[in-house]
Image (cartoon, rainbow, N blue to C red; front, side):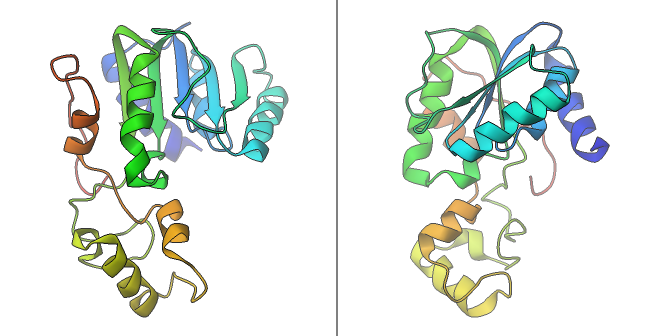
Length: 204
């Protein structure tokens, strides 16, 4: 939908040209961002750890007439990507990092950085800012982002109508309860090798 496509294209377009760019859509879900970026001219490789989602990307690409511009791959562990160093001009992580357990994010970011060409761009987009005082993404609760995970879980189970009584801490982390910070991204990358711009306003 345009409400999703235009902000993403505006952001990428501020810094890069998509025409025939080799682009990795990291954690592509069911391929919404992959289709948007391919329609804008990029040659997209979509990687997704959920096998059924990767299949959906392939079907959507076929139905949209974009099979020649989107390659959908099931990669069970995105800490180990099946690509040579410096393979891609651009990488997008669109609404992805918050769904990765915090202990694994550094490895995922470093692996994405490995396959990005020198001078290439990594876009982290639509991930909730953990420093924002309200968790709009998962629970709707104020101050939850500032709590340790175990306390945040107990608070969420007790106070959020969005959380089922059967959900576990792992379930809520997978749903995106623990947001991402600018410094978390920057510190995962090689010191002196990355320039990290924080261009978004507000909570995301």
